Length: 319
Image 1 (cartoon, rainbow, N blue to C red):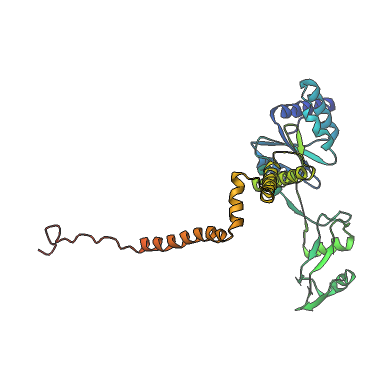
Image 2: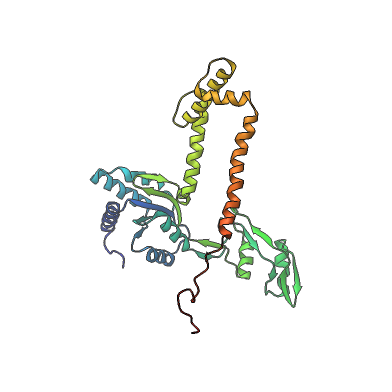
């Protein structure tokens, strides 16, 4: 049962409850709750227990409670939640894995009919097939430019029709047709809008990043730093290997063009003086590989030593 009392007592009780949650939890999911019913919300609460708590309320009350908590504790981090409290939103306080909690929330969606004036969240396509409606309803389909035919005394839709586009308002004709066909095209539930974690606020898409994605983005960043460093000749750790390689190439080029030499350049000069050594250097590894393969095959084919017969052991099974 809900808390009973005066309006002021209800506000105080709500402030106390929210402040307790702010003390206990450091992770919060800010969720949109448009078109979410009370029964559906109750199911979400049950599914997220015991690691998570769902708290709904007026935005003004939530903002007020957060400010009271910040003033009383000196913890200003939760003030980052205030700009996120816009529209019909709720808070999910959790101690579990944010990605797992977000996925669990997404499971609790229910189908809903297309009501007149509603903004379509997705494209609505009417599939082809028998509608079960009598032929007197043909004119209704013609108004919506839906190709039909009469089959066995019922109206049949010939081809799929995109009835409503995402972002359009649902008209009375579209809503009536979907109701006649028994189609509930939309599904509603809590939608995670933002994630709060120990003072940091970020988009829920961040939760979908894997270790491979992070490594790929990090490698791309290192490559950009290296390219910039090489372009402006500014030494950085990312560009250091490339700078050393380029410097070595330049020094070798000077050594080849002049009589100056050093140990690393001697081998290059030796190859340039006698190009046949290139072929020998390449052929040597290939030859060693070629000889190793037959040897390995011979080892595989080598027969195992025959087991000693019973006669050799001094007795026979048939004696």
